[in-house]
Amino acid sequence: LEKMLGATVKAKDSGKVRLQLKEGASEAALKRAEQCVRAMASLRIGGTVEMYPLPEAKVETELFSVMDIPTTVDRGAIQGKEGKKVREYFAERGVIVAFASEGAKPEGAEEAEAEAARKKAEELVIFEVGETVSVKYGAEWQDATVLELSDVIVKVKFGHDDSEEQCAKVNVKKKVEPPEEVEKLLLFGDLRGRLELEMSIMQLVEKKAEGYCTKLPDRPELENVKDGIGLTVLPLEKDGK
Image (tube, rainbow, N blue to C red; front, side, top):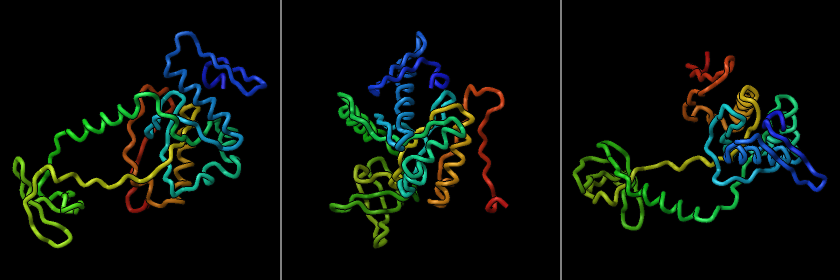
């Protein structure tokens, strides 16, 4: 841990850990180091690390990565029995792996979330002719296709009975497919080890949830990467033949 974090780590018999980073370390670095220590402590049983908010899937060049694992893949497939696999990941690649769980919300978080949701609802929505949308039909929302547009009225054709109707724009919204439910898997360690392990885990995930990896968004290029380490995504045509 000391080598990984560039910090002094002292564990007491009571189970408490004293963590001291270099002078001038940021609050964010201290928080990330604390999460790493908690993940290290979870290696024995494959436990979780509480975080709020739960992070988005990403790869950072320093220490930390987050993977989205579909809930259809059992945790045991990643962790192994009683955390055996996560201990093997650490022994083989020096990478600490732990699932994240949502921790307690800090004071004011719910108000901030409500404000963010309100602002999103007020954002200008632009529809296009031919687009499939959701239209309020009585007490329900029905799928429909946009036929014509004006400043306040949208003419649509309903999918359930092919009827056409002019609707107020306030009763029309973008059709958004519900996101796939995922759990957050945290990886702590050097970049090469994390990238190698991520490939292994995604191969395992693909076996359990076929087609999941092909639906993932394009990976952004890594910034400030040292020589010899990189990440390239190559789409394979015709099933890789």
